[in-house]
Amino acid sequence: MSELERIEQLEKEIRELKDLDNNGLKSYSFSKITAIQLKGLVDIKQKINESVFDDWFAFKMTFNDNLIDFLSNLINKNKSLMKSYNEEDLKVKFIIPLLNRVDFLSYSNEFRDFYELSLKYQNDKFIFNGTTDFVVSKGLFESQKPYFFIQEFKKGQTDGYPEPQLLAELISAVELNNDTSMRGAYIVGAIWNFVILEKLGKDKYQYFVSENYDSSKIGDLKGIYRNLVFVKEEIIERVKREK
Image 1 (tube, rainbow, N blue to C red):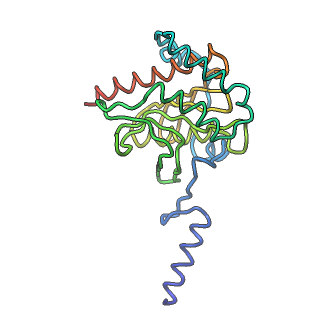
Image 2: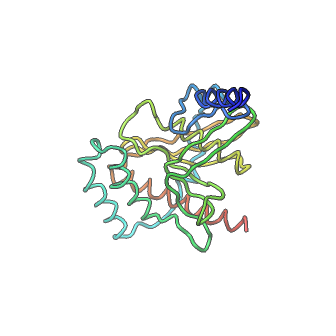
Image 3: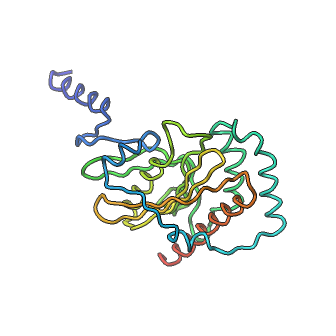
């Protein structure tokens, strides 16, 4: 190896240690980004306006006996252990059965749910990348256009608190899709919060966080289920318009 090659290799190793790419941009992982880091990279503010959720949460649907039995059994089987579940326990035993019941797979409209999906967004200042917990996206064999995210199946608040992680994913999707808004949700133990992110300008965003939904209570779990079905129906209508 020549002296020049050794220098180039050393510079590459230094960039990797500093999470820099070949253009000198710093990379931030979805799973590790903090609220402080996110606010240092973009102009983002939380706003309080419950009315932005009106269309979403006012969605009407029928809960037949079979569906109510399913939701009630899901609670009864898990609520006593939910606080002790680790991330994978909560995901496998409670979250995935719920999401599978909603059924985000549509062959006719060519979209489905993806777990552990890699996503990357890069601008002239930084890179967001990493693996998303759950995303509903256009495409059956590979993700083509993300529509909705759920972040972090965790049992409690830690250094990896899911809100900034979700926001980084929503920002990435808005920019990659050339959209102006994106929906998502994050989960901390039994508690769900739904989120709407809106783009206001270059690197400028605002977001809204819903009230808490406690999935260990049947009324709240019905609300969670209804909100997820609304997302599914909205994606179906969006795909039809895009065709």
